[in-house]
Amino acid sequence: MQKPFKRTIHYSLLVLALLLVTGCGESNTHQQTKQTSDRTPQASEVAHQQTIQASVGQLSPMIDKVAQQVLNNISQHGWNTQAKTHGKVTGGLFINWKMDDPSQTNALKTGDNEATAGNHDPQVDLLYLNALAEYMTLHSQDHTYDTEVQKAITQVQLDFQNYSIPKGWLYFTILRDGLLLKNDTLVEDAHTMAKNFYQHWYDPIVGIVFNRAHIPGTANVEHTLNCGAALIDAGTRWNELDWLQAGKSTLDHTLAFAVDPHYHLFYNNIEVTADRQLRVQNYQAKPSTQGNGAEALINAYNTTHNQHYLDVAGQILQSMFGSALWDTDHQGLLFALDMNTGVVEKSYKETRSQTLSLIALYHYNQALHQTQHSLQMLEKEQQLIDTLANHFYQSTYHGYFYRMTPGYQVYVSSPGKGIGVEDYFTTEAMGTALDSLQQTEFAHIQM
Image (cartoon, rainbow, N blue to C red; front, side, top):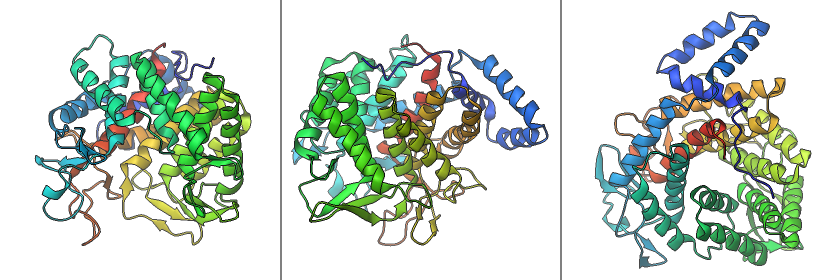
């Protein structure tokens, strides 16, 4: 059986990225870039390899510090006893709270937030558990968060028992947490989720997983790709050959329609027509879709060893970082590219876009191992780690916003289109940020 969570200590490409964060500080990045530009390519490569060799076996103090501070913030301010699920009070995490005044919570629109007191997104409970599970695995002797882990497990099991919405990333996260925490109930929840993907959401005529309750309807590309990868993993793991074939069909059909032939990026959505044909619905390319979609393909590659999946994932990542989505002035990924007009939406950067892209880059580089080509991709991985640890992270109050301006200032939404000054920490942004940063540390441990 495949072991998707094994990390080998000899895999050292990612260590260079961690070293950058460990010693970077606010101003070191530009200095290091200048020094590197003065070297010949051969000398630069030698320096890369020497740095890699020197840093094997080290965890990142910077990442560990950020993880501890964010986890403490959530444990102190995140729990909402009034949170509702399907109309019932179940408890859970707040969606957000004001950075410098945590008593202001669940701000979803301009004005009083009293009416949103019970709002609850179960996905953020899972992201918090995932961040805790990763921290506990990386720091097995630290029992600071034992109580929080048990509390989060109870909440997630309540939230996701027999969960049936076709979002494949949920399968991988619940399964991963179950394996990290050695929790059989969570593993069984992942099994049930995959079963539901196949029984309720896979359409054998169209050949993909999507919300088939609505035809004509929309297939969200990143969710569909992750559902396909989930069925491949679950079908292999539990010897369900029908699931495996449905997963392969989902990936093959989606890839045939969801990649723009000019930009080599995923469309945001494709449409299932009334006669069950696929066509492009939304020409927007978001970094979050590229990262999450590429991650799905890498997961499928790790299970099937189908080189095509890895090749497409690499093409998507290279195209994204080579496009106008990448901010060459300030680092980081902008919101979206309209592949129909070529216009980039550059008024803000989503935290989620950086985190999902970093996770995909980490696993892509891991799959490639030490090749000349992977060193090129490692440069962007370094920069994303730096961007998340030093620019998106709010070090005074210890958290992450949903989005920021391109220059990493607090974003102010237009009147009537948001909450105004968006200085609110979101549990989604904090959970995904810790996931991406801590996953890079798994290169240092054996599992």
